Image (cartoon, rainbow, N blue to C red; front, top):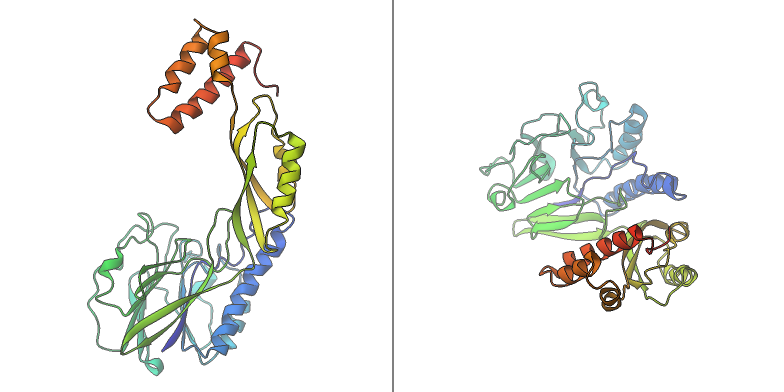
Length: 354
């Protein structure tokens, strides 16, 4: 039995609001969803599992009709889906009354419920969210049922506020557990318990690979593989900074580094290293460069601490430097040292210009 497992598609989301590429990103997410449906047709998948949050919020009726048309175009694929914490079953949700094609099975219950798919000798167990949060351990320890050759769990959750579970408790009752909710693709237990991750990154902090899972269940067991989709990828692009660099040089170097990206990549530009203590970082100019979503300053001012201690010997500033230099937690101590020295110099009228 061949299947595809997806989750957290978040149709209707508008990533990176205000950025030039924002509208296109929203359309790309719809296109990626339709691409998976086409892949199900091409691969002759017996089953499509959608583990919650197909929509980013309560779906509109016209959006459900769009999705249903795509489902109807693959009538030989059984489709089972649940509502997650984003598209939960609000009392007035169109999910509750929508008429799906015959091959679609929406599990509306908030308690674990089976869907028997006789044609493919499979039972899928699942439940939907009825609210934004539900901290019940609804999956628990499940006794294997003998009504079908294959037993699958379709779930959404994995943290304390959203259907918590322990992966090692699921393998006895199911041949495969298909999960959504956590935005990081992972095999929690190889070939048995899988967190799909989103098809596309829906937030600029969604780093790592995105895509869908395809697998096959046989009498010998289950095997799954991950198939990446690369319409968009957020990356951390590091920019090495030295005390000799001017603001103009930083912008020029950033342009050179950003030109090396793949066309689908969007950057968090991370400034790292030591900078001249008096320089004003060109954060605004860097943020306006092509496909930069965020600028992160992780630089440290290159203060001449030995000279400062000599110059201000016997003062609170010199004592502060000596104390923090001896701080056992080096990283925390240096950060406090930089901020403190800057504040004291500013108070004395000798700090960095702003």
